[in-house]
Amino acid sequence: MFFFLLTIFFGWVLSYAFASPDILLIAIVISVSMSFGSYWWSDKLVLAMTKAKPIELQDNPELYRIVENLAMTAGLPMPKLYILDEAAPNAFATGRSPEHAVVAVTTGLLNRLDRTELEGVIAHELSHIGNRDMLVSTVVVVLAGVIVYAADFIMRSFLWGGMGGRDRREGGNAIFLVVGLIALIIAPLLATIVKLAVSRKREFLADASGALLTRYPEGLASALEKIAADPNKLSVANDATAHLYFENPFKGDRKNGQVSWMTKLFMTHPPVEERVAALRGSE
Image 1 (cartoon, rainbow, N blue to C red):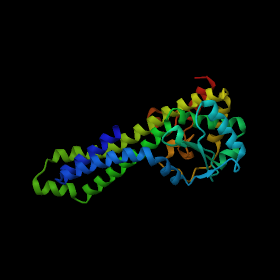
Image 2: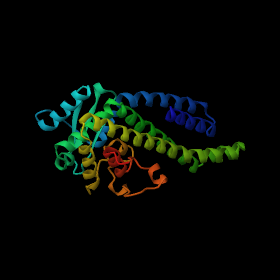
Image 3: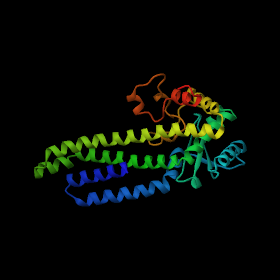
């Protein structure tokens, strides 16, 4: 709803700036269309962006059996499995429902983790599926992207004189234009903060649910430490999909030790130390 209203707001600003009520109508149509589109097709978009390849039982029997057993324990349908040919150990889940879910892992994850650690990561991703987090995450990816691109379009229009032209021709309200410009700068920032806050909360919940599923929190904690220590970056990751992954795919963005509230505000994942401490019950 937050992103829906922001998109409508952008349409309203544009309709005023260019004196065209049709722009607001177009913004409403786009908002509704993107809401439905993000529900039905966002998983396919994410898989295409990450270049993930589907696998079957014969391609990796051990991984397939781990996912199958954990899904059965969680009372979930067997998700489709995908592999990313990446050295960085990581994973993600996506899909609009448990019946249409996908779990994707990197080759680096399979090479670096032992069985209990791999089970911990898979349990975490299956918990995202059970908690419907992948729907929330993929919808946020698409709708946040719409907001950012809309803001960019409006800013370019302002710089090219679209808004200023109306003001000069009709003596429009300069205060409105200033407020509108400030809103255009702040709105994408707010969209990003909301997206990241949602991501961090869901990661803590998936950690707890995954630990309950395997009944072995140490496996997940150990996997987190190994993944955090790995120096490889995920080449297919970008700002739109970073929050989907098991752990922050941008290694250079990780902060060690204590981090300020401002830093945490813009992190895609909670600090590894906090996640590990929560799993080991030492908070």
